[in-house]
Length: 324
Length: 255
Ligand SMILES: Cc1cc2nc3c(=O)[nH]c(=O)nc-3n(C[C@H](O)[C@H](O)[C@H](O)COP(=O)(O)OP(=O)(O)OC[C@H]3O[C@@H](n4cnc5c(N)ncnc54)[C@H](O)[C@@H]3O)c2cc1C
Ligand SMILES: Nc1ncnc2c1ncn2[C@@H]1O[C@H](COP(=O)(O)O)[C@@H](O)[C@H]1O
Image (cartoon, rainbow over all chains, first blue to last red; front, side, top):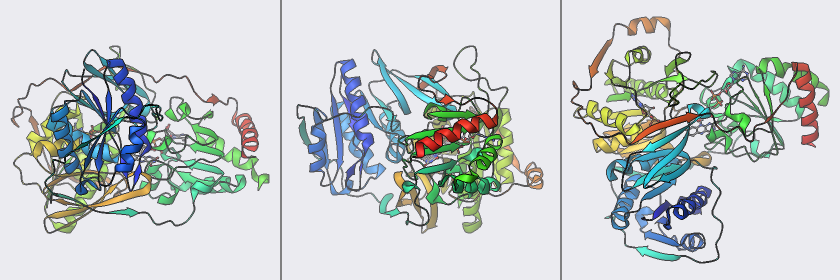
């Protein structure tokens, strides 16, 4: 059985946590299959990353090239396809992230490796890969079989698998020569844009009243503002609430918004998509109010109320009036 | 600027009761409301805005059954010029969908092909980027801003943690559109009525020259409800009783 490759994700001088989660999964799958796994590190000036990764993986393959300084799917794809042709791994893991989503589908087509995206479970049945995916907004899980192939690609949902810890034995670092011949002009990275810090900082709040698409419209925001005032809390929200301009972007909790860890997180009319949940599941106490008993948010909440928010919130607001 | 937008009709499941089909391979869909995939709505709106700025034509494409016509009508009402529906058996294989879309768009002079970042139902997040590779075009995914100049698109891609990256992509290109890229516009009833007069072409796979019989990359063996292991403790009673318990919890936890 051939190796399992794990593509290291790093950005602006930092290895992203998802990398360690993928290494954890890579090791587990490699043990099951009686094979080994390797961290694949593409970048520029990444020696210190290689040292770190070697404490967690038996092998680190490194391609150093100044053109790999910032992620560019075309250059990553060229580099990976050449490594894959050389080493013939049976599986390549990458993040279901801004990086993996920009790279995995095109690499999969080029290599003719079947792709399973956003996996929450992976296993081999013989040499065939099976994936568990969460579909229909997280309300059901699907077991997916991929066609027989000599290699597969899977993108991994962040926050699902336990990270690989530092091991006792140090892995080997293998420097590979870069197959790239300079930059490409069809796709060019220009710069990172960081959102200016304005308005309310929801990451500092101890109580968050977080509203989702289920509140139905911006006309209900004042109700939640009053509740927030009573509780001494701050209003935050899910992404569609920002997309629809019901609240400003700085209020967004999630993978593309802010990560929060308040003492109390009250999620109202939020279904619990992973892009939301990974950024709030560290809260001390999570309380969800949702009229759908099967909403995935109840899988992460400590307490739940299954009801229309309109039956609950006005009562809660009245009852907490005296708390101000 | 000629722009093709790929759109999907999806069942709305967030608020619905879900039941699993007897064969265990999918959910029951006859009780569900269907709509245009949220991401695709933003993509169509973006194409129409680009057309207003740079002129040209917006064509919407869908692969799906007869019923998918209703989402095409909606796209036409949003300002698309023509629509094409490709009749094909429903499939949960993103690679196959991308291959059919590639066959349908190949050789036509589109400057941009837009898709959504992901479909709300099976959420592969795969079709747009796979389509780009099949057509030999550059792509950018999770796009939140587009500006076109001198045969190039300057686009912003959304990364994690509120950071974006600015990229330059040579046209023609495939872009996968993220929600929030623009402000959706209210679609009036009269626009929908007018849309019914616009051209909707319906074609079969043979007509577009799609003959591949390659095995599917992915097939669903079984669907099931997620394990309920660590479910929340559900507070029960009248709203007053529930709120009573809730205030006790909040009081205790907020310290
Ligand atoms: C690349 C990418 C990045 C993303 N980043 C983020 C992110 O940072 N943050 C984020 O939140 N999402 C993000 N998303 C979107 C995410 O996938 C979901 O679409 C989104 O989180 C859903 O928001 P929601 O729960 O508010 O809405 P929905 O999924 O529509 O859920 C609404 C919920 O409200 C309930 N409800 C309806 N009416 C009522 C009522 N009257 N009373 C009580 N409950 C009611 C429904 O049962 C349902 O569960 C991202 C997606 C992608 C592809
Ligand atoms: N059946 C289909 N017909 C046309 N476009 C589709 C279809 N399925 C997916 N797409 C497009 O591909 C995008 C991503 O879908 P997916 O990769 O399935 O998550 C969608 O937002 C659509 O733009």
